[in-house]
Every structure is written in C-alpha cells, then in structure tokens.
Length: 112
Image (cartoon, rainbow, N blue to C red; front, side, top):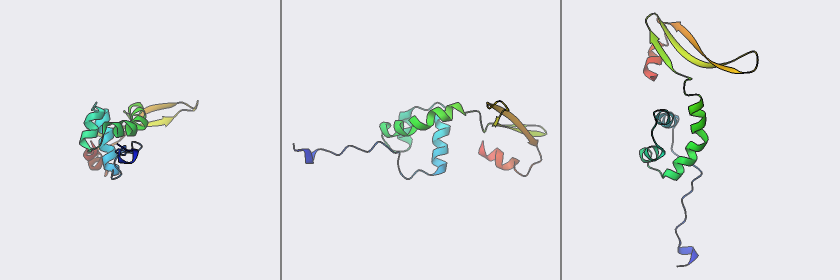
C-alpha cells in the first residue's frame, strides 16, 4: 500500500461547520445536563474526537458559569442571575429581580 492510497485522516480541529448559534446552545445545555462527549457527537453526526476538541475549549467555561442565566419564576417577580464585578476586582453571581408583569417575562419563560 503506497502512501498516496492511505486514507486521509479526518480533521479534528473543528466541529461540523454547519453549527448554528442554536446548535451551540443545545450542546451547552447537553454538557450542563451531564451528557457524554460520545452522546453529543452522535447527536450531531460527528466523531467523538472532533466533539472532544470542540468541547475541550468550551466545557470548562460552560461549567464555571453554569448558574449564569438561571431564571426563577416566583409569584410577583422573576429572578435571574448574572455575574457582576465587585469593587475589589472579584466577581459574584448576583440575583436580579424584575416585576412579574414584565413585557419580557414570556420570552424568559420560553427560554427555560
């Protein structure tokens, strides 16, 4: 078998090129739900190696900031969590509440 007849290895630097922002958000939610790399790769029809390279960069950040974007709906108000800077240069995950009668509440409920 000559070198020219050997199969060309698949590129592992990128995930499938046709990912949309909605796909990336779905992958993030799968990671936060505890899905394995193999399950994510199978869902998007790619190899586990490509998925691992893609997730190797993003997974630590997604897990570090997993509570950001969490939304709680309570009677009379909606509470969401965001990272905010402190005076000493650190950061805290802080709750922010908005009125239950908000023009954005329906949109927030659809995101969860």
